[in-house]
Length: 238
Image 1 (cartoon, rainbow, N blue to C red):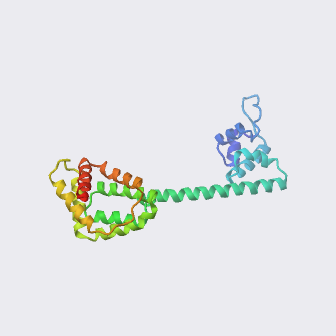
Image 2 (cartoon, rainbow, N blue to C red):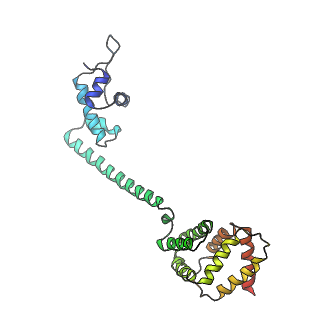
Image 3 (tube, rainbow, N blue to C red):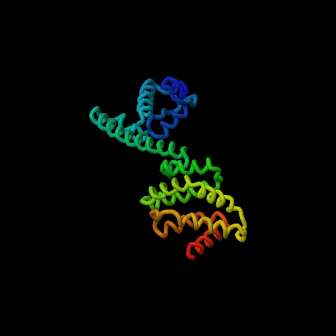
C-alpha cells in the first residue's frame, strides 16, 4: 500500500495533482486507515497513470472520466473529436501569435509598408518624432476610413518629399508647433504653404468627414497650428 506521496512519485505527478484529481472526481480517494493516512493500492497507480497520460495528451479533464469508461469504438470517436477541437485551438493560437508578432512590429500592424517608408524618410530628414507621430495617426485614419485614397496620397507625399521647398516648409511647420498663436511668422508661413500647394496637382480626397477628422488630429497638437490652418484657409480663398 502506498502513501499519496509514493503514489504521485510512481505516476510521475505531484501530490497537488493527485489531490486535484480527487477533487475533480477522476481518481477515487481511499478512506484513511487507523493511523489517519490514506493508502493507495496498485489499481490507483494504474488509474493515475491513465489519467496523467490522457491529460498530457491534451484531453480536457472534464472528459477524462468519459474516456476511461468508454468502449474501444466510443474511445476512438471521442479522441477524434478532441483532436479536431485541438486542431481548431492550434489554428486560433497560431493566428494570435501572428498578431502578437505584428504588434511587436509597431506601426506596421496599422499601416502599409509604403506609408512606413514615408514616415521613416521623414525621420531621416530631421522631422521630430512628435511630428511623425501626428502624421502617423492621420495615416491610420486615412487607411481605415478612406483606403481608396491611400495610393494617391502616398504618391503625392513621395513627390512632395522630393521637393526641397516642401521639405523646408514641412520642417518649418514642425518648428511652428511650439510657437505662440500670435507669432508674426505664421502669416508668412501660411502664404508660403498656400503658394506651394497651388502649384501642385489635385489628388483624390477622402470624404469631408474623414478629412475633418484628419485635420482635427493635426490642429489638436498645437494652438499655433490651429491659427496656421485658419490663415492658410483665408490665403487660399483670396
